[in-house]
Image (tube, rainbow, N blue to C red; front, side):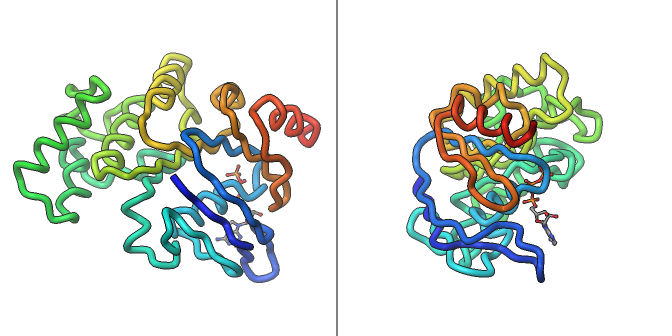
Amino acid sequence: MNIQFESAGVSFGARVALEPLTLAISGKRIGVIGLNGSGKTTFARLINGLTKPTSGRVMVNGRDTADEKTVVADVGFIFQSPQNQIILPIVKDDIAFGLKRRGLSKGEIEARVEGVLARFGAEALADRRAHELSGGELQVAALCSVLATGPGILILDEPTNQLDLKNRALVERIIAGLPESAIVITHDLELIGGFERVLLFHQGRLAADAPAAEAIARYREIAA
Ligand SMILES: Nc1ncnc2c1ncn2[C@@H]1O[C@H](COP(=O)(O)OP(=O)(O)OP(=O)(O)O)[C@@H](O)[C@H]1O
């Protein structure tokens, strides 16, 4: 992944969600931490074009995120509540949905749906109803729907929120094993504890850009 923030900032009227930020991001794993309202989600939404900068620009793999059509394919976003991500009632139909929109053939779609479920050993979820899934199963289903379309960059917003210990461990293992680049926004400090690069936001500003231990120590000072 190659993400460039070029004086990119976001204001909502008089409220500054993110001060203009200049930053280059590459590598496999990036953690994003900070108190509630510090600008983490705004930062992430800038990367996939869901939020447009009100100043500066954000480039993803050489393309301006203002050009939504091209960037969306590069960046998969797993929302804070995966139940809001799954649109269709049956898991395999939901995974296929994003692929149909990309104009793939029926055979190709079936192969991709099977392949992505097999990747997580989640074949049994194919015919399940999304609203009957557990929190961990929902995370896996949402991941499958997003990963099936082949984004090179994945943004996970609070992926362990509200999960029990078993499902939290599952999600931690999945993140560790992803071949895609992943940006993980979280209050779960253990989840990003091993990351080489963690961005700490505070009051709309980047307060630390450092290995996990250093960024977490700074976060604890801010939160105290
Ligand atoms: N659409 C919006 N309209 C107005 N203000 C907004 C909007 N989106 C975000 N904000 C404000 O911008 C600031 C940063 O919000 P953001 O969601 O990026 O924080 P966050 O660090 O992700 O918080 P949390 O951990 O609670 O999810 C907050 O003050 C928030 O209220």
